[in-house]
Image (cartoon, rainbow, N blue to C red; front, side, top):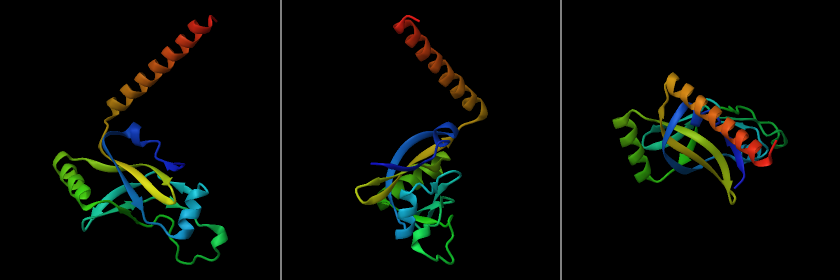
Length: 152
């Protein structure tokens, strides 16, 4: 399952509560462009419209070998295929707990393009600082362990 794009800020900006997987509806040229690495999840999010899930603000660049692509919008809304029961569960949790739906990564599974996304709660500034401190402490501990193990 090669990863095509990741949202690096998702785990830093949000507490991920529950992960889901869905199929991403793309045109042929968009699939090829994404597989070439011309895709970005920065600033993207998912919304629910008429009991359908839509990926918004995701940038997929033009695929040059496809020829002239007039009226192509690289940040157009793209449909995400998910079971209706999962959508209802997401809507219920999202509304009752004040959560948002955040894309985590886009990857291939066989010949299909899939998206992993999660119900998430936004972190506050002090929570972000705490996670930075925690990450730095873990990094120092690993370095110290490595030093003592190799006797430097």
